[in-house]
Length: 277
Image 1 (cartoon, rainbow, N blue to C red):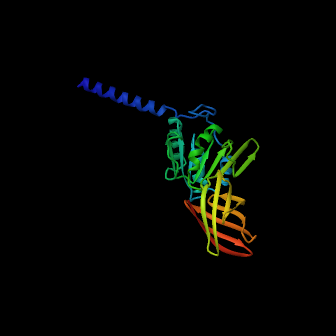
Image 2 (image 1 turned 45 degrees about the vertical axis):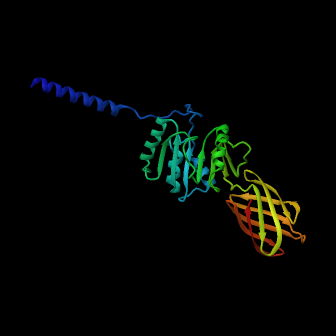
Image 3 (image 1 turned 45 degrees about the horizontal axis):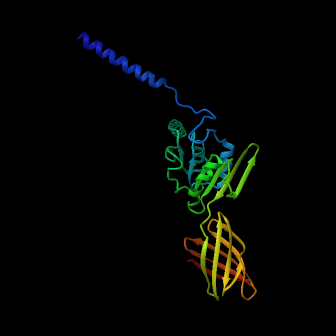
């Protein structure tokens, strides 16, 4: 009997010591400047986070992905102040768990999720807003993936650019800066155009470098450069001179291999359509 009591006492004391040890284990806390897989961890200030979200026009309808989420400050702040859903991707398992703890403490587990993963492996194609604080070379490595995202997706970077892809907007205040890009629709290639009000045979050849557009328009075998071409998300605009020497202003929207819109000249507006060859 004494042997059984002694054994039970030993088990009880051992369990108590184990629980005591667990309770005493301090929670992991990241150190500013600590090195990660590709970059060191530096938190984004609340002031710049707010500005980045303003630049993106982030709202309740959006799904935000933060690439390299660190302690989760951007997804948490975005969900709390903008009412959106957010996902953070963090490579460091300890840092990711720390971010998850921060999500729980903020009471946002229903709207914020932190993934332990690699930003070059995880799928974030459903995002409508992407935030990042990565080095320029990493931004450029991600660029091909970002350009395949749905047109209109907003990409906002703390401090660093995308190489020769010029930003659509930028902000600088003191030592902090942010840049934003809007993913453009792919429009490069040859298009056949039709204007029901004109029986012109029209072929449009477009070249594209990110959101920059150029091209040539052929009408009845006569070729001319398109003038003032611009692309904003999927809205394509340009001007051409018709066989009647009139100036025609075109505004269309591109969806896959189709183009629909209108052309205005002499104060009159007519429909215009097109199809990619």
